[in-house]
Image (cartoon, rainbow, N blue to C red):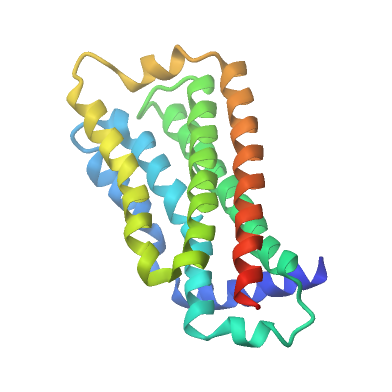
Length: 218
């Protein structure tokens, strides 16, 4: 586990150097996009954060690629499993953080009366944020390792466009409110689906990533 933490610290140091005021861009975009209809503030922010924070893991893989990290790691006492976990543990934490941000902001805007939302809806928004971010990471990590950052960027951009398309479609349906849709979903069903998706996505993605990294070390 110490090796995993050391690798994570290496990634975090590199990622932190590139972070700036642009880190606030998801919130700014959500505010701008929700000017026409404030109901979409939380859904838009949720979709942006679910891609932005997990995307930091993909950024760390890009740094590894640029620095020819795979040439160095071969002579280090670091296993393929250690390297794999050093990406997936941060991914999981980033998803928890993004969900926590949505939960906090959702309760705040509801408390001040800006957007009336029930606790159940805020909770579902939180789970959707964490789940989508995790799926995004589980798909993007092995794809980036397998095809490289340059070749996989279009695939990742397509994944990012999915939330945008969802928002556009929902906004075009004048008689359908997001809150009504989310309220109709039983909370226990959502919880079961989230847990199942997390476990399945993590298992398959980690297996593929380990296989790809092993092929890189041959």
